[in-house]
Image 1 (cartoon, helix red, strand yellow):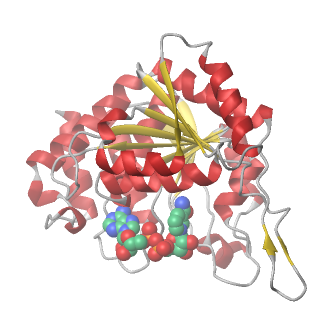
Image 2: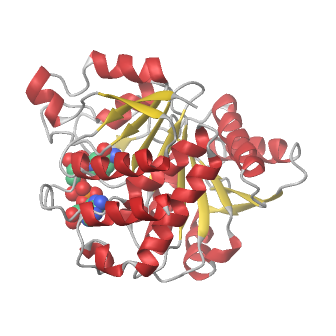
Amino acid sequence: MSKTIAVIPGDGIGPEIMAATLSVLDALDCGLSYDTVEAGMIALEKHGDLLPKATLDAIAKHQIALKGPLTTPVGGGFTSINVTLRRHFDLYANVRPAISFPGTKARYNNIDIITVRENTEGAYLAEGQTMSEDGEVATSMIRNTRKGSARIVRYAFEMAVKKGRKKVTAVHKANIIKTASGLFLNVAREIAKEYPQIEFNEMIVDNTCMQLVMRPEQFDVIVTTNLFGDILSDLCAGLVGGLGLAPGDNIGEGAAIFEAVHGSAPDIAGKGLANPCALLLAAADMLDHLGMVDKGNKLRQAIRDTMEHDRDHVTPDLGGKGSTQSFGEAIVKRVKA
Ligand code: NAD
């Protein structure tokens, strides 16, 4: 196939991990061309805008973007660029796979959990956040809708079917947050009936945290609301060895943006120390999304084999002596083999 995607290298370590990722995609021969556009600090410095219109236009045109981490300046009233992108393209599903890889300092080596987090409503609304004049009382609102709950639960089940997963767990707090979390749970129960081939269970969020730490093997796909998904997906990333291996897919009805979960890591930027795997795994998810599932799996296997057998080439965060470039080159060699 031939397809053009928008590429946003991003800030800090972004350009380094993006260069490694694109060289691996090229080696996989997936017929992709790149429309490279800017966002973040680099765009602010060059164009006076953190998220230039040309970047939004490129994502709207190609509908698929691969994005490096972006730095949002602290203070100055800047809205997070990631939140802006999510809202602009209504990227309602945040899909966060957590997979065990060899050679990590993780507590478990058998984890394969995908968290599907609702990305547009729940407790993350800008409106409904108030503070009393005397600063003594702060209120935040949670708003879930039937439509929003239904589309995220349906996304989780459809994804489970497509990827051959066996079980979906709906995580909630409906025993206490009776209306908002209760609505989500009721909708999940209704939609689950449409997928009898997939096992469905429900779990309260506090118990889920304990179960994830003690018996993570019982989970397959987790679907949940915005705040719980934010927390649980980081917990899952921790179970497999941290953010260096965590991709994040932001999916809407039209556009989809694939990124690493970690930030721009200014402390190691420009030093060649950044682990490119999270962005590479996001690229593998992008290939799945584009219907190139075999290539996506080939890429994941190449990462796995490199981490297991080419220890000299992996980056220091994984205990190696290699660099972003040597890690990328080792993966290129394996996908070409
Ligand atoms: P961070 O994820 O950038 O870094 C946290 C720690 O992890 C640092 O020690 C860093 O060196 C290390 N690290 C991160 N990615 C790594 C990699 N690929 N390889 C090796 N080590 C890695 O988090 P932070 O320091 O809190 O944030 C820095 C900037 O990134 C902030 O401006 C923040 O707003 C931004 N950020 C952007 C995104 C995004 O664009 N998706 C996400 C999170 C943070």
